[in-house]
Image 1 (cartoon, rainbow, N blue to C red):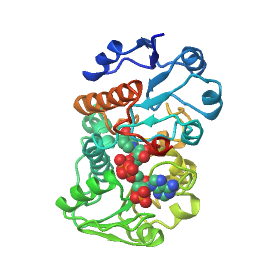
Image 2: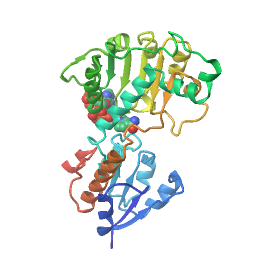
Image 3: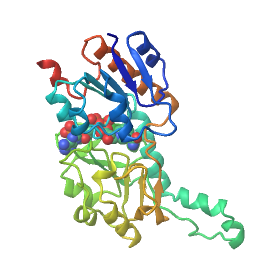
Length: 324
Ligand code: NAP
């Protein structure tokens, strides 16, 4: 009998079209994203799924799908998936590392510069006619914070953290970092988390979300940040306590923030960060360029094709399943 694969969204790229030569493919065409209940129903008779980071594949779902043979996610982060539950069943999980590193590092710098130089605030000021209404210009008009010569602290020195470090060096920043595993990266000084928090004028988060990193930047660590610092988070919302961050920003203890990821996505309108003028917000678009998204889809499709052929996935998040 022909194998069945469900794809939870129409995908860009070329490789995804090769899937239909190998199996029976069913693609969710909307409207909108597939609801969680729909995923369980659609996957009930499938051998595999190609999914997005918005699709939650938890233990309960994995256990309800005895026929599931592989999962391929078009994302580098796999915190939306119960990896342990898949591994326990020997199910490989594909992801898309590497291709989105430079694109996401660019997003970090877009947010960092926008937060430092108040770009969103200034944009609103011009757009809403405030500039003409007040006919205002003065030496302290929209003054921001210098990036060149400032200290950038990286919380996490994986692929994206290192790509951000390279950009920061070109901007004349001093770069310090904390990583759980010591690693030598040119131009980056590894320090304790506490000293990175205390010394950084700009602090950028680059950890995977895991039980050990959930809530890592909690109230006390945010309070330990250098007064007047800027926080950038493009990693995962669950790593930062949003309420504590909002309080530090509204009291003026922190200068600004640039946030691409939220504890709950899409972000609820009552999230306290949304009402603060000194926060630059983007809707989880770290890797959003047409070229990078097509490359990610190609890798996700290649992972699925390898699994269908009974070969190891080229980019597997739980390669231990192949050691058995
Ligand atoms: P990576 O190269 O795999 O780096 C992961 C980092 O997280 C490393 O510093 C790693 O430390 C650390 N880490 C992983 N598990 C940990 C744990 N349990 N405790 C402490 N540290 C842990 O990944 P990357 O490509 O740089 O991406 C980093 C994260 O960015 C991804 O996981 C994803 O969530 C997020 N991301 C977001 C977007 C977006 O659109 N906003 C785009 C791409 C990625 P070690 O070096 O010690 O392993």
